[in-house]
View 1 (cartoon, rainbow, N blue to C red):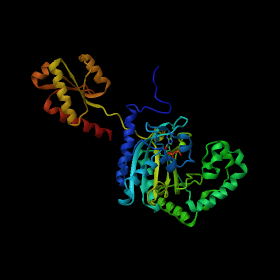
View 2: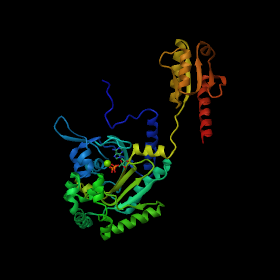
View 3: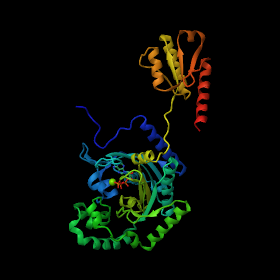
View 4: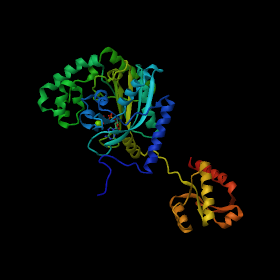
Length: 427
Ligand code: ATP
Ligand code: MG
């Protein structure tokens, strides 16, 4: 039986991988400009980290985690998201003692056992940013601004920023009562997951994807109407900060994170151009998470952005993608001595930064030229006994079919000039 990739996973094939590199390079470059450095944490962590750090009333922890026991009987989980690992590392490495705020970015695979569909995979990838130790809403605005700049620099339009405030443990207590009072008459009609959340975390009921639960909770009280003075002021400051940066937004009281240590700002960046899985980026503030995981009280704010969904949006909105980089020179050869010379030449050109190729599959000269054609070489050259005797090669421009004799010493310069020419034409 042929072995296939596990359900919900996707190979990123050559051709596609170029787009991934492009997106990741853009992200890292943008983060550099925001003074944010990359952090790399393990793909797997102790299961407990996510139970405590993401919350055991969330879909992620209740239904979606890949958990296994290792050989010593430890419960290990593949990371379903990026924040918990970064927080764990921040505490473990005592980074709270360094300059504040600490700023991190990451590019990671995530694993969630979900029903695979367009824009929803079991292994997917996230770009993310986290900032620790900044309570001011300027930090929230900076994080959101980075995400918006990223989309803009990639040429993705038609995105909507939705913001909300989910308050803090103090104001949420009163809201929780009001919400439970509203939901209680329908308790029996909710799905089992919602029932299990009624006492522990009723806010999560508002996030249930079951349509009937959605109908039952329509018209429920909204957290935004229960904010304490501190949270309300913070929300106003967030809006002011966004406006100062020229970032448009809509307030969406329906955005729920709903964990005790998620606080104040919650946001999503959505598009309606790609159908159901339209949320490309989600983020928010988590002022109690570092403490919850055993560190000193430290504010936190960040986002996660799905790369697969981003690429779908880029495709849908006609955003520019990097073009395939052609081969600068293909060196064909005849005879044993020709082969050695061709190998040395190609090696030398590669050291000089050229994209140079030769045949390594023992083709005859006709086959070599066919191969050069298939890989789209810009120039070809032939090295045989004649060329060796004369110390020159015949260089052929595959675009114009023009041929010329040049010495080996000139070759790199000619290729570089042709490359520059191409860049200018391409602009
Ligand atoms: P959804 O409501 O679509 O399930 P979520 O709330 O679970 O999203 P987050 O946990 O906020 O998503 O993750 C941040 C981003 O990661 C999402 O906005 C999305 O772009 C991406 N993402 C989440 N789950 C998947 C998945 N299974 N496959 C592909 N991308 C995903
Ligand atoms: Mg989800």
